[in-house]
Image 1 (cartoon, rainbow, N blue to C red):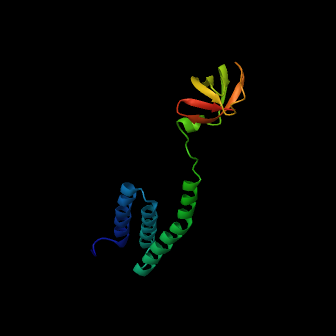
Image 2: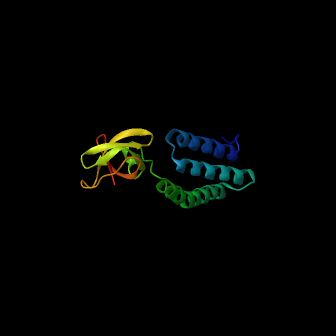
Image 3: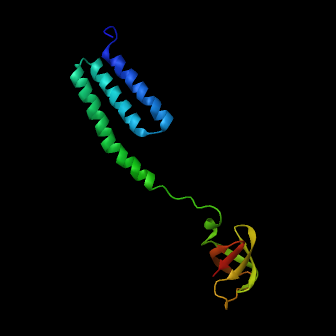
Length: 143
């Protein structure tokens, strides 16, 4: 062990911390690996073991304290991807056959759908634009 410089051991530790980073995708391991690289640099510059460990701890804790909250915030701010019938709600459609409380046909997202009016007493004529408020089975509820 005395034949190998301390900075090499720090780089080995950084590589060892990089393995679980890749396998588990936990960024905390990457932050610890960066701390080990910083300790390797300190060792290469001639710092004693106590200072090397202190550099490792300070850099690792600083990264964990700063980067983790930013990453968590970005993870929460990610827009939700809406697919299927949920993506059709709120879209506009064109009436192909008169739509009333008992039924009709609309063109929605390039497809022909059966539809009925949300207000049973209201009717929409051919060519009129309507808003899809809900999907029940294969029937669009329009307003």
